[in-house]
Image (cartoon, rainbow, N blue to C red):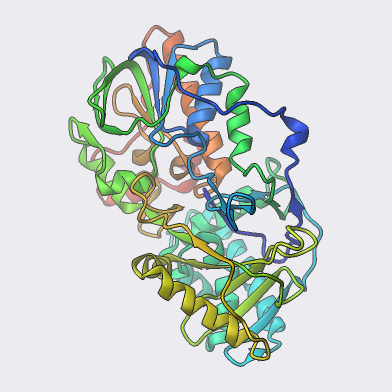
Length: 496
């Protein structure tokens, strides 16, 4: 969110606003609603109405297959593209989840941040810039390992091998700014090769040609992008909202889905777009039980959590740059602040937010909200000791890990997750297919990963339908042994 499904930034690229001017792209229209008489029998059931699900439906439609139903547990389409009104119904729309558009290019400004510690302003911008250079070196060295088919290692080992070893809080937060803010996990929890592939495929290929991210601030919410795309082709009887899936039975002959309401849906094919976090928690009962190789792949991936904590004050009192970097003695403690009260974003809004990730996100979700607010306000007071900072007008953060429909923000690839695991994660089971950002080898964690997987899986299903039910199974490694490591990243890429 994120699918980076809320995600992160090209850290020295100017975070130029994109008020994605959706008003210029789409006419205002009534909200999408589900049909009152959606038939339970269809050719394809699409489980989940996020980016992968909507793009899969669009792909089927373009292939001439309109016998499909999107089954969505929430009351709207969008998945992890969700918004919130900060400051009440007449306040500002902020993004709970995804809000970055990666790769469209932006002007470079290597001084778009201000640095602080617990005593206030302190200039360690040179440390942050060196960390940016080290991150580039890490990615380049990871690409070398990929091209030489060397064994994967975690990114902490990669950093050590390029002689990057943080030795104080300033070097810690500088590394966090570059790495954790991107992957929502520490370097030691992240694959070195996959990190490099993920970074280079998004920012250094002809598909997304330029380095830089743009921030969506359209006041209808980033979700309008996918909702308006759906409105262009989706009919009421092709959408079931407020429909929570509890059971999925699959075979070579079709798929049967049971909803929490007790309603049973049947189809010739189904595409499961649930997050890997949901699959890990076992919230869905699969019948028969998922084979061991599939379950191992699911449990071997990581569902990372990325938390944005928003404050709205009567007036701005903080930095004029886009970002504030705070070096706390504890790594990852309220470290990266961003001003939305900025000429490029929402000037005059009085909004600032701080991002925490990984284990610290889980800690924040477990605490009383009042304690989280006081802790974060305490950091702000440390950053600006000369300012008397009172109570904010509003305060908000979303608990992605606690949400049973997502169980986290977006996937991250650990070093123990082998390319063969990825094959098994993506592989179909009979006529049940799996697709989403986590199944994207190139773009895991990104919205565009979900987009590509939705398109690609729906294309495979369309081919099956056109062939009269004769389907080519996606490759898998049913018996996982030491030989499985022989499947290289290059080999798996060629399979897609």
